[in-house]
Length: 108
Image (cartoon, rainbow, N blue to C red):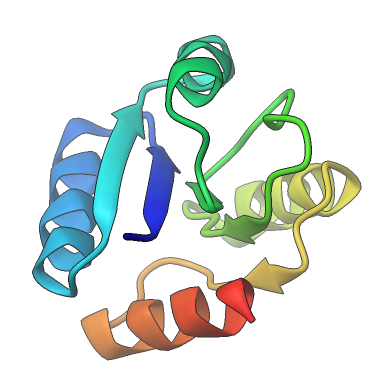
């Protein structure tokens, strides 16, 4: 089973992502921040990391960036995520199908 680590600071967004991804058949681990994510990734390595912002990505992880907020905040987070190794970007807000398409694209 494909394991996805979701790093999301906002509780409702974390829960929504978890529900959507589990409904699509993925194993999902959630983390609130980079420190929490690194700890969880060490014990349960993920095939993909979905992050709204991240200071230090788990080593070797594929990253799907989902920045949100104002245009300025989204641009700043996107740049930080790009420098962290993100190759795929899906700005918030997004639809369920767009998320699942981005996940599939990130895993190939």
